[in-house]
Image (tube, rainbow, N blue to C red; front, side, top):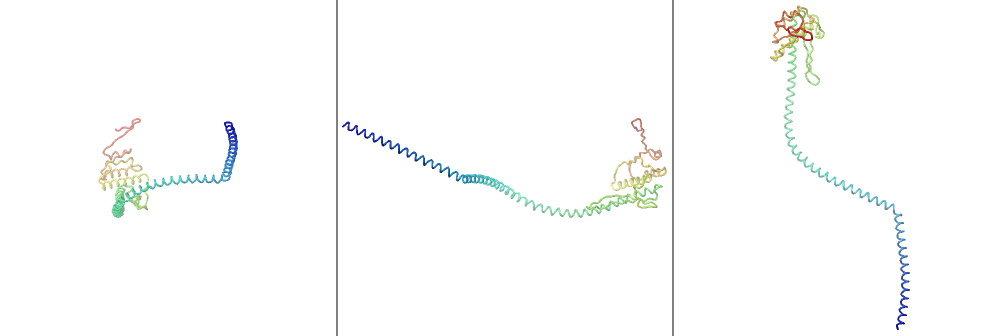
Length: 287
């Protein structure tokens, strides 16, 4: 029985070995078939990828572009929200300021009405002042002309002369311009410009006008300069005219101290106080 069982066991082992070999062959064939399927799948996948590579790239680019656009739009939206918030804050502040300005505007309207009334009054006053200045200035020139003429007629070589002063005009802008022109009428000619005179005649004219202006200032203001300096005023005049002018200077009521600077010895006889200055080397000194 043992031998029979051993023989059966041997037979069974042989059958098991055969079955195992069959199993190995089957497993090999299955692995080869699976590998073929995987290889075919990979090949098909590669072919599909190559076939649809441009489409995939286009889709990927479109996806990236869409993502970038989304990020940009998101950033703009956030920025818009911030700007909107700031704008609302500014709007609230402006509304508050507007409320304050409305009250100020009403106040300024009332002030403007008062200012307009003042402007109208100022324009009326301006016209009145223009008229007054014109009259006052013309009166001053007439007074200077009359006084200077009276002085000239006390000097022998100008005893028949008359001084006329013209000058006041309104500019295009409406301002008063004091443009003074001095004319002289002699016994033979009229409207001679004062600039055309020279020498003794020019000296006499200038001196008479200076004295007339001093007197006018004294009369209109009640004050003026306390000193009238005359530096060699008698150039071109002869002794008779110089004596006449010195006499006039003593007689006229200008209430001024007159300081004469001159080298003419004739003047010493007509002055009460004399200051003599002499040169001593590089210096001058008062005797």
